[in-house]
Length: 159
Image (cartoon, rainbow, N blue to C red; front, top):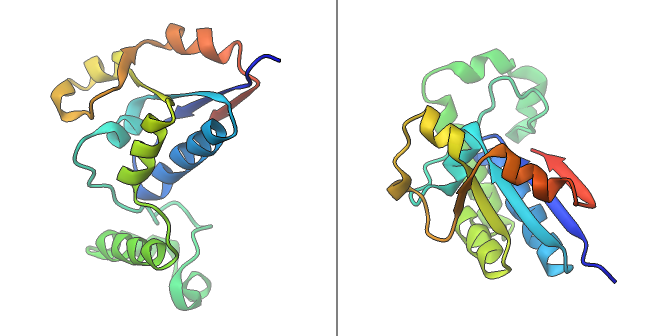
C-alpha cells in the first residue's frame, strides 16, 4: 500500500493563522502521511527562529472574543492602538490554559516527524530576507518543487 501524502501551502504570518499548518501537518505525519508545508509570502514568518507573531482581529469578524465582545465591540475598533497586543496576549493565555502546545513545540514536533518545511525561495529573494533568521532544517525551493509533491498528494490544503 502506497503512503498517503499531504501538501500544505502556508501563506499567513499571524499567530492565529500559524497553528493550522503545524497542527494539521503533525497530525498527518502521526497518521503516517508523507507531509510537506510550503511557506510563501507572509507564511515565511512561521519559519523564523524568533517568533514574534501577533493576532489579527482586524478584518476577522469570526474571531471569538471574550465576554461576548463580538456582539457589541465593532471589528473596526480592534484597529485602536494597543488592541493587537491585548488580543495577542489574551490568545496566548487562552491557549496555555487549554494546554495547546506552543508554536515552537509544534514546529519541533513537525521536524521530528519528518514533515518537510520548505521556504519559498522567490519570496525570500523578493523581500530580501536574511536566511540566517530561519530555523535549521528547512529547505529553500520554488513553486515548481512544491507542485512536484502536491501533484502526487492525496490532500492539498491552502492556509
